[in-house]
Length: 337
Image 1 (cartoon, helix red, strand yellow):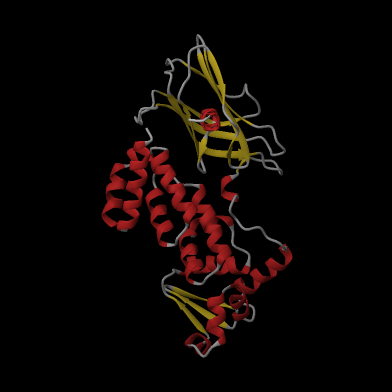
Image 2: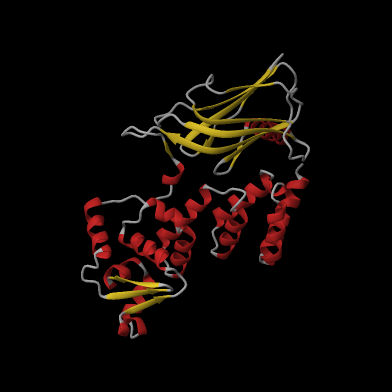
């Protein structure tokens, strides 16, 4: 091996020593060589709107610190679980610490004194349960995650007027028939927001002649949320409640911004209860980032070992190509241990 190759290999090894792998709410730092009486600090890693650092020190008493990088953002109020895992493929922690609603500002805010002796090789696994910031108008702190993917209003007065046109049925000229109810809307707005609706009203189709659109695969509440989005007055809680139905509508009616808003939002709160459902939808609607996030959650972060019953149910109904892809991810991860 020539000197350049040796240097490149050494540089990669050094870089990987300090690199923290992340997904939307998880962080994982593999410590492969940690001798006694030493200190190590990670490279910065990004979770939500902050960059973070980890440091670990072993002396007579080992300690681990987690803290955000100083920035222009408000300081985080964090809830998280830290697990120390063996690096030999086991997924049961040998030490665990849980923190709820703690304001983090510097290296002294979260210090975990670890009574269990640290091995030379181990994994620091962090699951962020919530991150909050202080509300500018006072009151209780607000979670930053529910607001990450909501589309921003560009002109509040105009959007308010459009919303009133829908909710007060001002000069509506088309009727939307959901599976369990109907609502009036406006051809011009629908056509401007969706090329599919535009085609319906441009040619001699049934929708143009009868002034109705049948959306029989959506209940009226989800259909109303869909229209609220198109008119620019969808509330956050309605968006969160109907994300999957909105994703289906965005795909069906070719509304790219809504599709991407749902994609980003579904990526932000993957957990044990929804990961297989999210993976199925990522496959169905061809959402690469969501599929990658689910794969990382299940395989890289080892969650697949904790939800075996759900995994069994997933295997019984999922697409064979998707199952094959997941198994290849598992096999690749096993080979890397």
